[in-house]
Length: 383
Picture 1: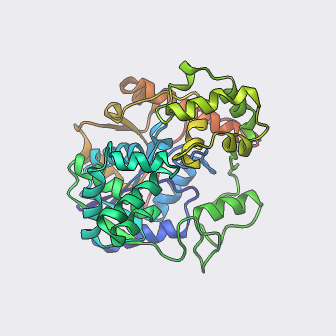
Picture 2: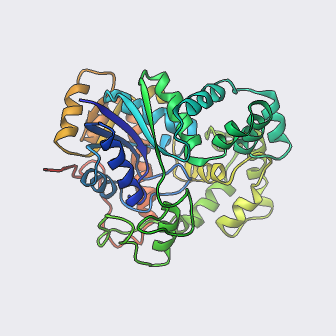
Picture 3: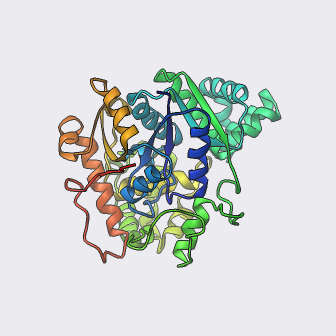
């Protein structure tokens, strides 16, 4: 057995994801485990499609087991997102972390991970963000000045930057290797398709436009109700505009600058999410961070440390996934299909799962009944 772990959102699962799984398998990997965001995502949005449908599609197209990455980890900054997901994969005993990347030079990525690990509380980077640069841009500018263009270009590449966080987390959890796979077809967040490849952001926009996406994804979506966060716009606006210092400070992503901006909202109430984010613009703060803050607060999430992530739910698996689970028995993390049994070990995390699931449901057209998370049927794929 040689197992690889992949961190994903698969929202929606598309041909680029299938290509990634195929390339990982072709590298000699026998088993592929995936830690996948559930109902809330790292971009600060609800998942477009149901998490189990995405998990089943992944197992039908190359993955062997899909584990749910719950909120708030799924909608946290890249470091927290990566650390929690990789911890789950380490619990399944994977030998490496695999990821799609614009950069595939392992030595270069490893060096970038070293550099990234040395940058915490860097005064020069703090000065750059204070001058108006977002944190990712400040990092890139700092790296360019101190290490050169080659390294700076890595930190300017979205997937490679996330890959660096996976490498750092893999080191922490004693996963010995990593495997970068070159992106195929289109770049991250590309607004054009190329052959059978389209970015997740383009596909989500196509679904909003009621366009056919079947050429770009194996996902069967006939019975799936997409979720759009605008359907909860009024609730999000009310939550932020009525928040006080104590309730707002419950979100770790909020700093004093953002807090002050939110507390000023009642003086001139925003009428839409776009207006809200425009009002909350601060020096050094990305739009994605503001979206994650709004999602965290309006979904009523509670902060949880990755150190508390000692149990996780299985969403879909096959025979090879069963073998991974057998090897994980007796380990530090409990993997189970039952939310009730998971709740006995991590009650606060399960509360967040339920909140995230209901929030996402309210973002659909609600033509289908709400899926009870405790009775949700978990799929075993027969090969």
